[in-house]
Amino acid sequence: MYFKSTFFEDYTIDDKRVTVGRTITETDFVVHAGHTGDFFPHHMDEEWCKTQPFGQRIAHGTMIFSIGIGLTASEINPEAFSRGYDKMRFVKPVHIGDTIHSEITISEKGEAKNPEMGAVTEHVEIINQRGEVVLVCDHLLFVKRK
Image (cartoon, rainbow, N blue to C red; front, side, top):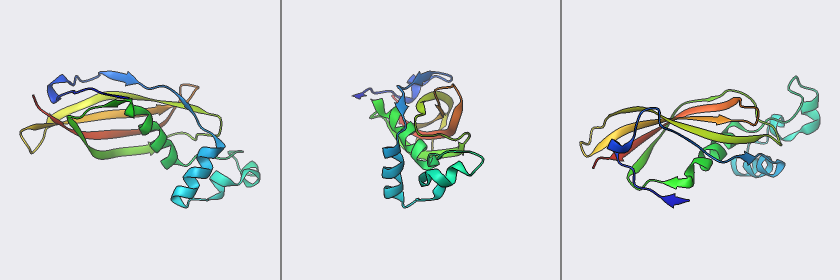
């Protein structure tokens, strides 16, 4: 992890960065369930899941979002402030043993109410080891101007 000042003017539409991968473990399931209170059988009951069409436990979507976004934190930009996330979709299930990584593409730039800032949208795709997109969202940023 390192700091890199990137100002509004430095962002270019379609610029892309790719993170390292991370394998999802059973411990991730248990810890996330403990943090959130989501102990639904889809995530925690291996035997019940065997009786369902999906056949195995499915990762919490919120866990995949948290881990996938956490992977993007290898670069800290002190000039940018997160406004939140839009258009999040759980596209495909993730299972224990799957490895995910994130791909971040600058998709929009625009004006902000504060003239000292600009608005930047990063389109985030979380992708499994088979190259399938499992989660998408847009990260909204305010970024200082030079």
